Amino acid sequence: MLFWSVLGVSIASALVPLINIEIFLGGAITQAPTHFWGLIVAATVGQMLGKILWYWGGMHVDRAPWVHRQLQKPKAKASLDTWHARAEGRPWFTAGLLLFSAATGFPPYAVTAVLAGTLRVNFWIFLITGLLGRGLRFWAVVAGTSSLLNLW
Image (cartoon, rainbow, N blue to C red):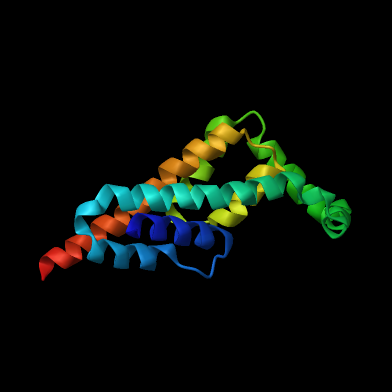
């Protein structure tokens, strides 16, 4: 049951940044310390299911009239063109940025997911780097919480 709760909360937290999966995950590991890897997998998969929606939204964001008008402004267009030039033909740079964002939350991964969709980053690069980065992040949360619990 705890696995499904973590999965559900992680999906919700991926979609609504005010929901903090790290705190929930830290509490979950105190309830089931033997389910270390299961909780990490649940949080990682749930987060990526939610972030895929952000990615997909980024791919279709220009369909919204307000966004389309904003992207026609010279400053916004230049900024988007700059990011497109950075990402295009540089898959290692793109993958590194996605991995770093997924693992650290800087820049916020929801923003990075939308940008990846907008720039049409290869879906598999987005998915694999996201799974690795989020997995590392949640491993650190669970391992840190477990270590603190073992001190007492």
